Image (cartoon, rainbow, N blue to C red):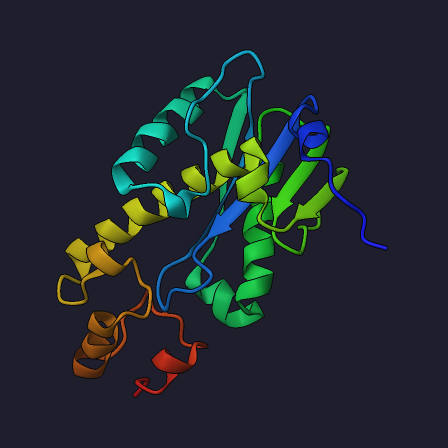
Length: 199
């Protein structure tokens, strides 16, 4: 018997921390997670899965979320950690770090996806949570903006790789740059498309 999730009940929980991560699929850069507890008295219009919003809208909403939320925090797992423990475990580690550095302790943690990080709070994993739970949507936006901004900074360090456009994802442009130039310090050596170019 399938247990249905009451999204409205979860959305209305006091001190609900929404948690999401971004950066599982790229060949380069960190995994970045965010945890957000929204203020029920300060509405934010337009919260949605970060991937469905334009970059300009994400930037605008990220600022509004940070100013209106009761608390928010970022967590991350570096390339070396991704290579050491795999990207799935690194994602959970980044989420754990985000939750544990919030200024306010949550009553419950709602995580986008199938798995929850190892934190000592009541928690629930919700598939497509960024579509159904406002706090998760907010977390997905903050995480996406933070990681995208960082990858654009790497574009200044490695200008020939095109990080500002593909953010480390395996586009044709990125693969061509890897083939032509080899790997950088921010590439994930454990990922097959990168490993083949390790000298």
